[in-house]
Image (cartoon, rainbow, N blue to C red; front, side):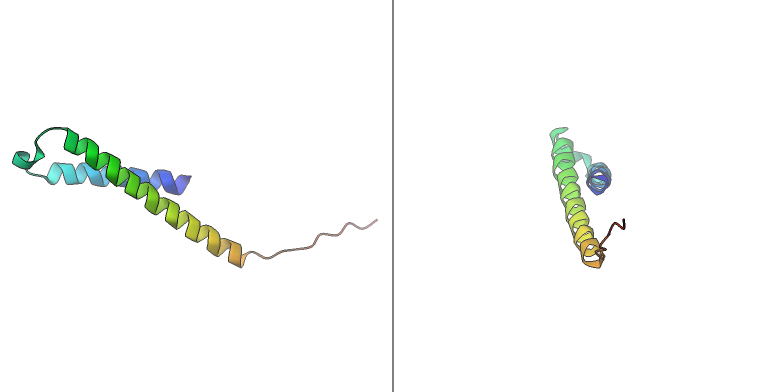
Length: 72
């Protein structure tokens, strides 16, 4: 979950930066900002999900199993 939020927020920031760098003649109306926010935040969340899954797989491969026995 933290990876999803961090990368979605990063996508949000990138969308705002891209919107601010578009010249005013091409901007048209505010719907471009909404589209950029939706797509880039979604793409950022997807990247965060992929990174989280990769790190989870790596940590599962490195994990060791221990047997706990109870002595009486």
